[in-house]
Length: 232
Image 1 (cartoon, rainbow, N blue to C red):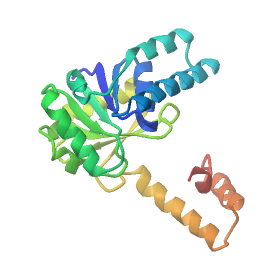
Image 2 (spheres, rainbow, N blue to C red; image 1 turned 90 degrees about the vertical axis):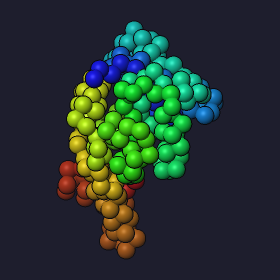
Image 3 (spheres, helix red, strand yellow; image 1 turned 90 degrees about the horizontal axis):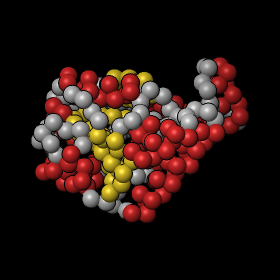
Image 4 (cartoon, helix red, strand yellow; image 1 turned 135 degrees about the horizontal axis):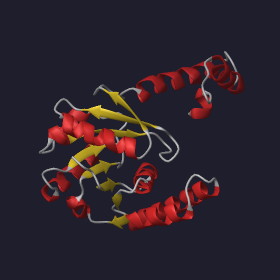
């Protein structure tokens, strides 16, 4: 399946970052949010972040202009009906995500792939509330999206190979690296990261080391680019 038109649900920090990288990869992007102010702020932030990329020589002014022209916005969820792929990046609450997918379903093409940027909610459970569990999977970007290289792809119990391959191809086209995770709580990154951050906080609380000592120890002793407290 060829993906060319992508709908992004949510114009917050994750949603606008996702729209940003998709547009630079020459996808036509339709970003939706219930708030007109959120959409305006998202477009301003995308413009600012792309300007920073131009100043660093990462992209050209022409690429920036073309990418911004590829992003359209709407407050009407049903407008996403003709997209090939939907990436939901709304608030991390299962009831909200379920409501979004239920509202979308009557308007979608039979071939449209549904995905969620959730960092912890069961993909199988979300998919079970739709009419296309075989065309549903997790599409978990890292924050900030334009900078971070990793995308976790999470298959639900019913996700078919065609859907997985189509999403994998999107990750490759936007120039990022995919890691496949099974549908377990918190998947890979957060399952490992959160206990480490919590342990660093306990280490500080118990007086084992200072903030500087803890972060320096993990950076120089475990080759982490930043310490767990700095990351938190």
